[in-house]
Image (cartoon, rainbow, N blue to C red; front, side, top):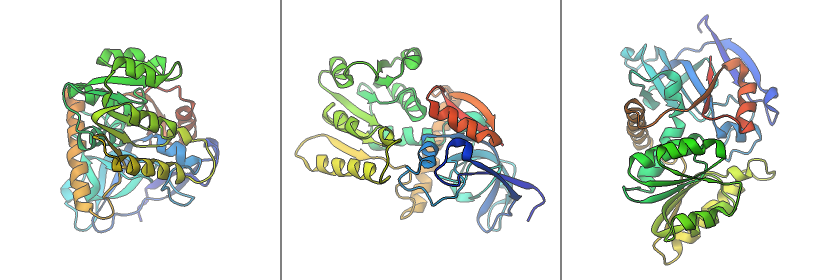
Length: 343
């Protein structure tokens, strides 16, 4: 074991943000195939907000270290890993474990961050960028001239989706709170205030024939409305159940309902299609294919950041030891951009 200190944020159970615990331990050494990453930036996503409530559908048992993704320098490599990786800036999607000063990661699960992108900029587009890219290009196959509806277009995934869809030549209709409307207009998107009026009716006025794709993170009734807004040949991509974040009961049931609806709709004799997007699909059964796809897609996202096609939105940077304040801020809904934790 190393003399360096490992600092981790631990979620001990269903607690308020202030119930997060800071723990220290010796830094572990990488094993075969592993790389030890000195974390430079990790972030707060919607997943951690759900996990704190015990509402994320496949979260591990308490206690555990949250943190969906990370960016940092390779500090040491284990047996079987190219030692030339040491010193390189890497990004990794980990689902849990990212809220720490040092993280052991399988070297095959890392993606190198190109020069010219800061750790915080890269962090904003790891989970959010992969999600947006794969839904847009691998699920909905959005093309120039199409019209898409992005729910939560001011949020982490939604804002990247709006930028990527615009870059692809699509017309974007985005639901968002008013403070994001100027930003969306600057992209060429049409903003809608989801808190006022009948959103489906507003969308139909803008796209009388329906939209070619809907990206829905809300779940619940919104998924049904989204399906009925599709044009012939359109695709609904559901990727969450944010509307049930504060519910009680089974954490799997909201997702299972969405899956049941997509299966039912796809069985109907129509030209529309529905799918539920899971960023981890294929990870267990086709790891090599999963890794290759993740590396290819995140590389495309980083290239878009470098070219200006994506502007990373950073709300604030806080020390890792202030994770409780960061989570509280994220849950307030007042932050614009990603909240970055810096060990």
